[in-house]
Length: 60
Image (cartoon, rainbow, N blue to C red; front, side, top):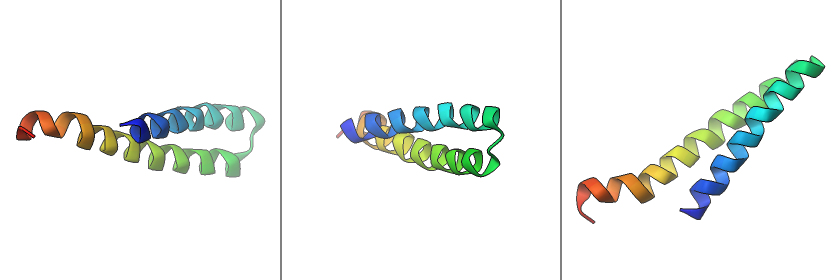
């Protein structure tokens, strides 16, 4: 569960970086931040789902 929270924090920082890079008009940095936000966001949601939500419905 701690891993999911850390990954979510990194995804939020990547979202902040996207706006900062758009402001500086650095499109390579914005694209890299967007890809990072998508990857870290996906893994954070998947990890939190696997650890918190799935056991509720499967009875584990």
